[in-house]
Length: 433
Ligand code: SAH
Ligand code: SF4
Ligand code: F3S
Image 1: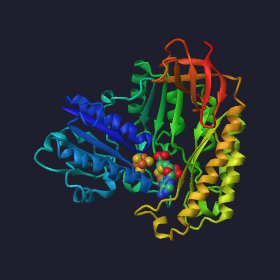
Image 2: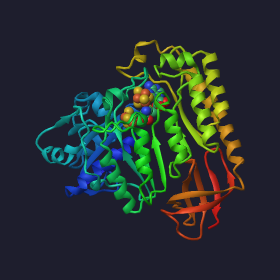
Image 3: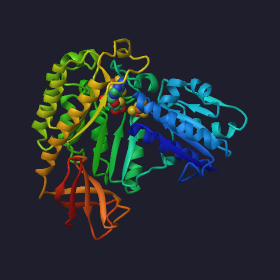
Image 4: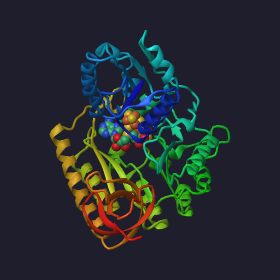
């Protein structure tokens, strides 16, 4: 039997799909290269915006048609599964099983019982449920995701995640460290600690916090780069900045979603910090690590966002000078507090603001990237061009994308690259060592 997993959404979902693939492989299933050649298709879904949810529905259209011509088991997992539950069966009777994010450990048993019954599991557990990490079937052999917590207690007024992933649950520290040690033995060079809100990590029995965890991970030999995502400014303490600075392995890079540059919008978003407080964190980080690369998330068109609020977001981008930006039009989501506010910003205004924001950021990035031309930097190579086998790709410590020429195959290795040219979204160069 062959399976195929189609993953939408965040790194957490990607790591979950790697766990699901591992569990299925351990039960004797084989991974297929395409949907067409598989017997079981699992769609791991994202509900964060309506557009993310709609991606599932268009894929389901294709899967429904395919199922008319072949024997196929179809499962929907992840955040839309948790949100829509049996509604998905009602609208798409060809679906065989629905599995919320907290129920993946049952996957093999569910698939084998699907021949006779439809199956749905969407309950949340109160405690961490460990899936044996040895079984994880990873996509990348150089950089590995390691989940440290799940769920979110913050209830930002726009966000559906607390309703799809449930309350915060922390993974025991010994499980995290054992997984990273085993990744180190397998030759992984970089790990990315994952969670919806990593800074609020608290080890279940000992109560040790995120800083203690970073210090422990830092001690593991042969892992050279450590990153973590996602941080919340409300929980981002001076101690975390200091722990980053004190570690040689924690990359000088941070994704710190701000969402808006306007304090009144931030208040209505229930983010728990002001514009000034966000900028203070950035100042502390830059004082300690002047070369740190920062990235952020921004939502435009949140209910009641005025032109003045939007200008404050633009001025925040110009002040901080992020190396990367993920920006979205506000999308009302079920159950959230903001969905009870009037979605007052017309679609045209949201679109205009997003275009303006992205074009200002594009110019900023181009200028920042141009200043890197001529510099030499350490790059972890993770890919090779399909068109030209001498062109490779990777990321620098700041998590910027670098495409470079090398005579030798350097996949999985750290190399030194001299930057020769750039665009706003990537740097190009040549290996010098
Ligand atoms: N802390 C989470 C955030 C997940 S959502 C994590 O990274 O695990 C990722 C980003 O999507 C948010 O930072 C926000 O910018 C955006 N987002 C969330 N809800 C949204 C909504 N209702 N409309 C538009 N964008 C949204
Ligand atoms: Fe959503 Fe806020 Fe939780 Fe992030 S921290 S998942 S934005 S509620
Ligand atoms: Fe999406 Fe769920 Fe992640 S809604 S962003 S897949 S936590």
